[in-house]
Length: 317
Image (cartoon, rainbow, N blue to C red; front, side):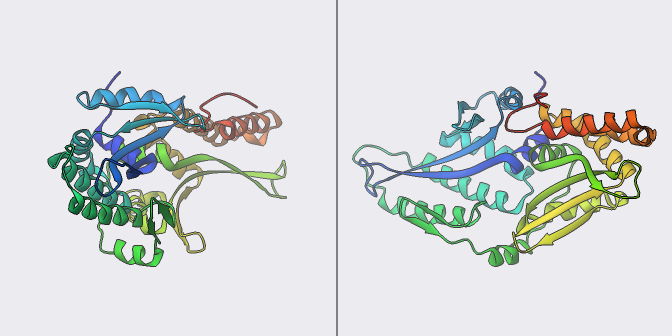
């Protein structure tokens, strides 16, 4: 397998990765808890073929794979020294505000644990008190709201995160990074909308969507600058704390997809992008104005909707 670029891996981890610290009871540790930093990337079994490329890119790290109860495959790093090496290389390439914060804190915890290894009979109570404080800080930047695990409770204040994120400046993006993030969080397809004036009563509209938490919208604004000629729109919805990036229009969507398609790696996303480009080509040729062309377009749309990142890329109709 060919090694993937570090920027692509950073985009993929920014979207589908998790930088976290587990806290579990442990009677042999003075404070009573075992603290373990970890990095996890979770994908469908179909898309998990990318794990081979990631492992090849970091050949000296001890990755572990396991299947979740939902059928996804996890690629996990848990050894403190492995976590440190991985983050030293990847963290400077992360762009999403909360992931940058979490990765910094996980790296700090891993460094403290690696430089002060636990030995039987040793007392590291003061160290673990410091680590617990760092764990609380990490959970403030979690994707979910309230965390309550092992007596560690943190209420996430969205408004505070939005204010804090204003001081964060997203670095310049590369196409590889955007492809990785889009593979993880993006959507490309054809919306079919009712339109009485259209020949068959519906109007097909190609779209590209990428949604992030409202306090992570810095990446979306940087993408808006990068693709300004494609007239992207960003909408902020405070009711669910989400920022929506969207490109629409036949030519604009086509240009965006043709830009990232060569850099996309996940099989399910690659197939969805290819089908969307096929639909756009059909529409450019005005084939959808004929009955056969319209039915062909509906077939493509059905196949696009049938592709699931969780279940892979089957052709179930």
